[in-house]
Length: 507
Image 1 (cartoon, rainbow, N blue to C red):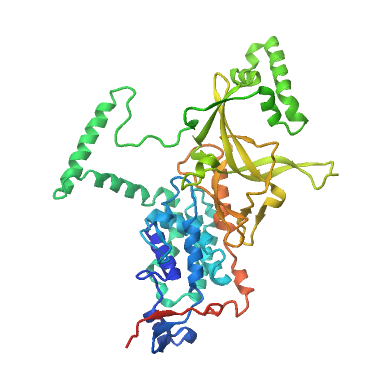
Image 2: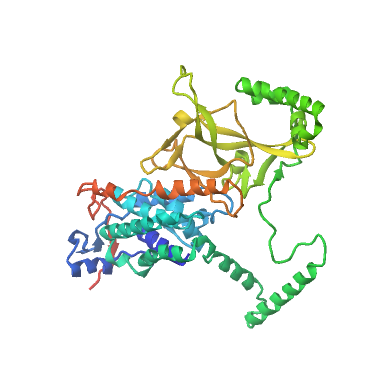
């Protein structure tokens, strides 16, 4: 955790030239003079002061504005990280007050997003490779057979960093990640051993302090009192233990609309809303008839849940603005527009019929990815149980989804498709959020929201596989991609910007 935080601060501080955080400066440039290398980066002394030529990692003022604006306008899900609006100064063009978890989110997913169209290609690629290493290393699912390759990729990445960044950038913190892969081999996944739980516990202990002259006594007294009360609570019924927050994510917990809005719908219209082919038009009637036949023959062959499903839900539907299920908190798009977070993005992978053309008479069943935004949340009441469903605007697959050269998924949220099949079960989707692409505002980049608590079900692997797919393997440019670049592309100095860093004259 601390390695990742320090690496992130060094990297971001150098890119934005933040005082006290940047590894570039007059002394760092003079090191090049003593080594006799990269003479084009040496300081230029003039009457108005000493100027530092722009290195290949130097951002112009406009690029710094774009970097900060991307993070400032970004809306992430609840609990993903701090609100970056409070951590970014658009006047000074710098980040401040970053916590360890903010650096964790920035290093693994948000930094590649912020530099997507900035810097020369070779510098941008090597930074993305470095971020991909941390993302892959911290995954909940770690493929042991790929750890050696991960180690080799990291060594190549650090060697590439040494080609472009100054020697002063490479302190002990840039070297320590080399040992993290071996640590995973010996101790297992990192997320089971990192410092975040201990940091949260320290926050609890600090809250016990009432008299700052005797902090240890306050902590001991409050801790013993809490343990005594928890021991007594074990003998009381329907009482939760103190000091332990209630489980934040519970299945099937809804956030009703103001006033408990209940919408009455016509059953025929509800069936027509789901009708997109002959199967959907006749299935509910076929099921009802089949259940009736089975009940007449033998009642024990039909479960109670199936009998109620065949009967159909009540015509009254409760609508929600938010819903917590499967470790995610979902909101409608209308609610997201009023808040600084984004919880309405969903991803679904489903089997579907695929055809090559309109004349293709041999459709093939295959997995297809769907990206959408939740518009409404319904709860269908089958008397004995309730089933939540999401009504979503789904992005059209043919022209609304594409992948860039690094494998990142981009969607055009204005291209809506699948209008005849807009409902899904609330238990099906994985939560994602969208960030506007710097290159083309019409497109948005898809970022997967990691599930914050472990749920032991078959779909947990799907979430982790997709997380790795989005943030590690596909977002790691190969070393061969650097070999294909020309010498001009790999220059140590930026010739496309004329801005130089002014420093005080040094004797």
